[in-house]
Length: 331
Image 1 (spheres, rainbow, N blue to C red):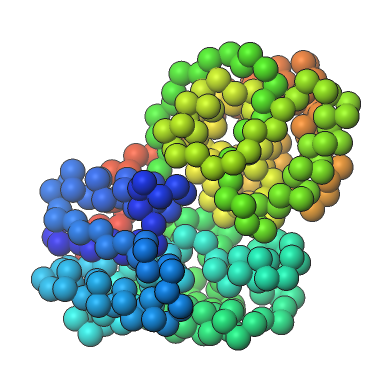
Image 2: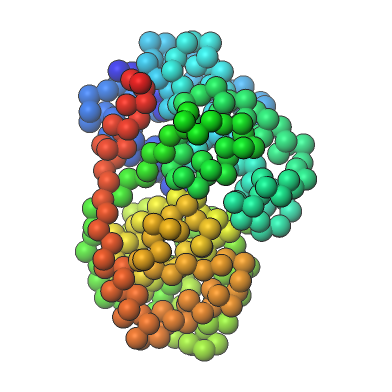
């Protein structure tokens, strides 16, 4: 089959969606399919509407003879790719990569509302947010819709007018375990994008509280490519990701490949699954975050945390992910 992947970002861009696009592309090719990946990328510098129109014409020629389009977000590529696919008569699948309306609201207002409460509380949206919501609702109700976790699926059902039986959950890939090295210092890795959803003020304040009791701990932050991140995870002490809500954090899955202790928000789509292997905290409670950091900083607490992380044994290849998408295309 000829399959077109529509994605907002792609390596060398940094971020889970970029690595997902590359992993899915490689897996589909390995299974013998023709794959063309069309990246939104540089169009981000243009105003919304103009950039969508430009992306429509970017993806249009690649749909000739295509069997399916897999769009990897609902904001940048979904609307123009859906429209082009509809005109061409090509099967269209959307895999939600996040929630643009919610993230934009957090960024605009600073009201750090967990995703599970956002739509239920009927917050006042800006014109741009209302427009994106309306367009997203239009497209997802007329597409094959794929979520990475049940969390976002359940949150979206009512506000987006979805029927549960017409949605699908395709879990993320979990690569094979990697050999770790013993940490030489108590460094907590927090490599994230500088956006409101990552909960920066609460994380830094909580870490400062913990550091007052444990002066030897260090918070490493910033943004690095995946190769460097994995190299740093290999010998780190622990990883920390108490975001407002992490829907399906590959960051934590990568840490578990090294059997490293982690701290993650309790609202995550992975919370129930990964609770036995690490610390879940209320991301809006600095004392709760500080408590978890302090427990890991303590030698006995760290020993228990390492033992918990060591029991994680799940793997899932991109080939399995690709086969799930192929089943939806052929359905």
